[in-house]
Length: 121
Image (tube, rainbow, N blue to C red; front, side, top):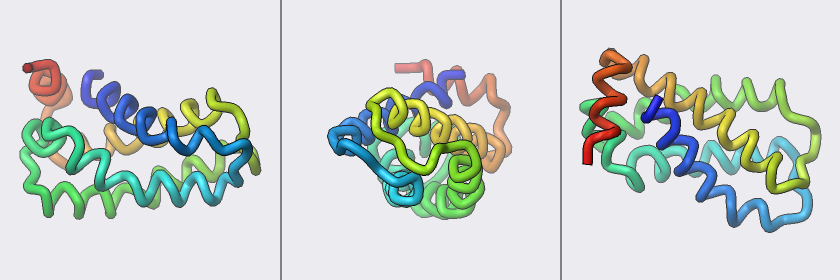
């Protein structure tokens, strides 16, 4: 799914700076992904707004709505501390997969239509 891949790539870029840390408690990581969600999905990649037919404000509202559920899923699946770059990426992708899927559901659009839009130049 292109929308999910795009979400994952955005978060992986964001996590590169965080992954420079040697260790991070899961609560801190989960808080970090929550605070970066609006920027990653509503500002960095204009396709989220365009393909989901969201204004910047609606995009932010949806991200705020879906973030707690995706954070809860991470809280349940993560170890207490993460320390490897691969772990930062793994859990970043897990969060962004949840967030991207929920964004599409909130938009009410067909996933194939959204993916076609994300694939368009």
